[in-house]
Image 1 (tube, rainbow, N blue to C red):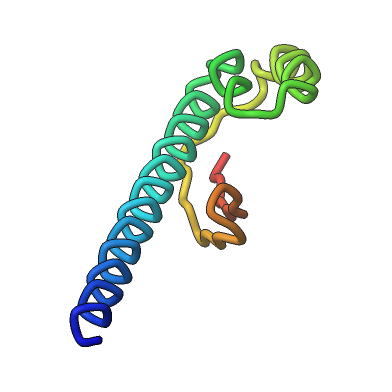
Image 2 (image 1 turned 180 degrees about the horizontal axis):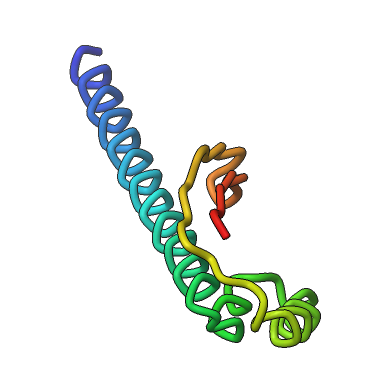
Length: 98
């Protein structure tokens, strides 16, 4: 019986370690995506920024900002809040100074 409990405890520790690693990888991927989008947007690389958006929004995004880009100058970008609502979904609140 104690061998079975030991194996169960070991399995639980291994699965929690995998979950922690997966969460760490998801957080890194989110951070990379947020930084990539904001850097591209700040430097007016709208086609690159659009690559972070859903396919159905990309064309309208690029069209809008290509037309408005001469009057938009972003000075700073600050990530204020990140809410992870699921493993592959988050809401990121960003402050732009322009």
